[in-house]
Length: 327
Image (cartoon, rainbow, N blue to C red):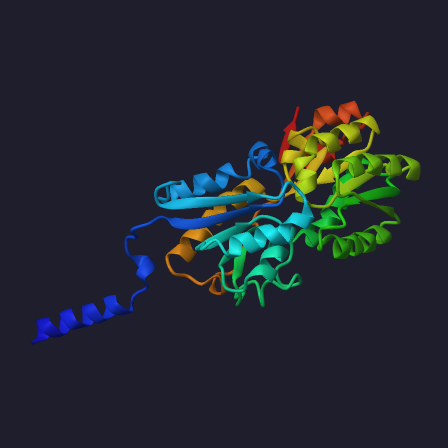
């Protein structure tokens, strides 16, 4: 009788267990929504780390899961249609990679689990009740960029102690940029630095932006995070060199592509880490119960060759602060 009771208890547990804990007769379906181009995702090494992260957890693409990848080529007007397509594609989870893709998915579905690789402020943007307990269908990684703005300005000021005119390169299609501009204005005002807002939504408008910076006689610029700017790293770095402007971005890929400086977390690691969230969701976890993670480490990367190109002598103090110097 005791053995029978044990067997009945085991069977009852099996009956109540989530089906997804057992072997499936078909692969999981995982979405990957990237605001920029496929080429940009490959060149800046944002796509591959996610695939590698999944492989490290035992998921082989084409076997344990099918990746349904969509790239918007930095065309914000395409995002709603792509989000609606993904929401209707019978997916188990979607990896979302930018503010624009997050917002489009938020409007398209409230039930499909979504993992963010890069969210500036989940609570302020309305994607989570709290970082510890999101409570909705979003989870993932938060970069808290607004908190890094003072450091961006500090490093530019270390490179240019007499900095007084600064530009902010932003894109009107990015919903987070308007509040970030206000944050930057407030920080710069305290340093007696005037900020010129230079909006750009296309590569051509980026070139026009440099003309605006020249006309306004700015000495340096901060690039707000956006997939368009990631896609156009080389163009921006070349424009900065042509106009002899110091510049800083949040991702190390920018100085790797010829920009002057970057300060921020490892976005490549964020994409690899996103696989951990996907794994937990495929095993039954609800995104609303998975806390948003914040980066533990920020890196300052400086391209010394670029500094020489624009005629900017870098202080030993700044170079010593750098985690990596590209010669």
